[in-house]
Image (cartoon, rainbow, N blue to C red; front, side, top):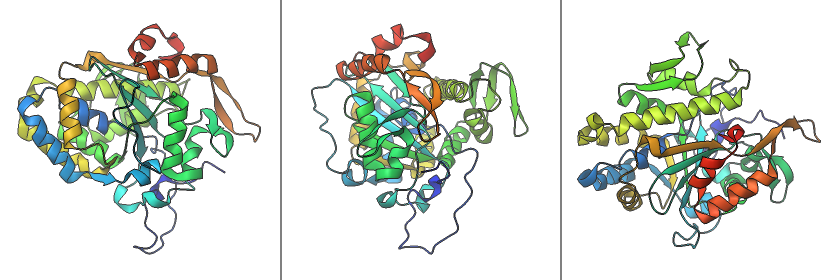
Length: 348
């Protein structure tokens, strides 16, 4: 199995349209999966408008069946474990051209898990490096992004579920057009960059930068400009999440219900979600988390133990198994906020 499979065929129906040549993998395929976070967090302070926003999302987004995502029925929302876990996957190709019923042979390159505590006090978002070397049921050890290639969305979901030690409750996938549409619908997003760098004709300075959709894509996908590559890219993605969330839940945005509805209508068509992510769920979540603000978002990377090489010669990211056990317990016990506050600096 190689890393040359393109995510563009993930939902491509071979029966409904003629065969087309495989397109070259784009350098920007590691796009940040951010829009679902915004869907939920962006409506927290809307109050009377939240149901209307949720219905707009229902109308414009694309719902997948439980069998397509989980293989069987969706996990019970009333399970004993605390909090809710949402798996976010990303694609740089148009979702309308792909088919989730036949996603084998492909790899998921952006993997994030968002944890919503039961008490609605804050939010934790964990990035999982795509090269993390993990157990994949029926296939032994391999990179975590190979699960989608081996068994489609159900195996990808179950692999991440095993990795965090508890259920994945919801799943969402979005392409880069939705990412750009959201950024531009807000008139740009201000992000705080840790480093100065140049890419694709754009210059990013250390400190605040106001980015449009195209600039934002460059900012969140770039890794070769940094000594620690993917890890700095993850920090840039997190910086963009913070800036985007701040913009969405600002007074100017929340006081304009039409702007919010138009924003959701613009990017929802680029999203594929499980059947449980609907207006009722969004409304209930928004009410429970109505006091959450940008400072309540906590970011971290799954525990790593350096890079290495697999027996087959692949470059991999080793998992810090002892630290992962602590993360799994925190997910299961709904104490992830406490873990993040005390986690080793190398994992933040």
